Image (tube, helix red, strand yellow):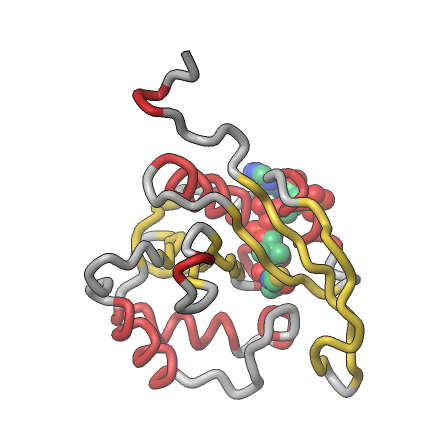
Amino acid sequence: MNLTLRRVRPADAAAIAEQFADPEVFGGTLQLPFASEELWAQRIAGMNPPAPGSNELVLAACLGDKPVGLAGLHAVGPSVRRRHAMMLGITVAKAAQGQGVGNALMTALLDYADNWAQVLRIELTVFHDNQRAIRLYERHGFAPEGRLKAYAMRNGAYEDVLAMARLHPRQPMVGGDAD
Ligand SMILES: CC(C)(COP(=O)(O)OP(=O)(O)OC[C@H]1O[C@@H](n2cnc3c(N)ncnc32)[C@H](O)[C@@H]1OP(=O)(O)O)[C@@H](O)C(=O)NCCC(=O)NCCS
C-alpha cells in the first residue's frame, strides 16, 4: 500500500466524515452516528494552523490525496502539571483496515511524541472487546492500567473500556547522553 502521511487539512473533512459514517469505525470510538462534514471541517479548522505553543497533531494516512486513516495526539486538559501527558485516538476506514495503515500511523505519531513534542505519557481508552485495537496498542508499547465500568454507550449497551497508557521508552537526556 503506497501511503503518504501528513498533517490533516480542512479539505479532508468530506473523506473523514465518510470514514466515520461506518458503524464499524465510529462504533469503536466515542463519535456519534450521522458524521457531519461540517463538524469535521470545524474541528480541523480549529487545529490549522496549530495554536502557538500547541504540540497537538492529527495525521492523515492518504492513498493518493484521500485520507484512509486518521490518528491524533490531543491535550488532556489545561493543567500545567499534566503537560507531559497527551491522549491518543486512531481510526482507519473499513476498506483499508488490516493492511498496516494503523501501524504506520502509530509509528509516525509515536516518533513525533518521543523525539520532538516532549510527551512523556500517552493515554487512551479502548472498548474491552476491540481486540484489533488492543493488539495494535500493545505492539506499540501501551499497557492496560485498569477497566472502567459502563464507560460509554455503544449500540444500546453501556460497555466497559480499558484505560491504556505508554510512557516514553527512553526518556530524553541532556545532549542525548546519560553520562
Ligand atoms: C483499530 C484500527 C485503528 C487498526 O487499524 P488497522 O489499519 O486495521 O491496523 P493494522 O492493519 O496496522 O493492523 C491490524 C492487523 O493487520 C495486520 N496487517 C496486515 N497487513 C499488514 C501490514 N502490511 N503491515 C502491518 N500489519 C499488517 C496486522 O498484523 C494486524 O494484525 P492483528 O490485528 O491480527 O494483530 C482499525 O481497525 C479501526 O479503525 N477500527 C475502528 C475504529 C477503532 O476501533 N479505533 C480505535 C479506537 S480505541
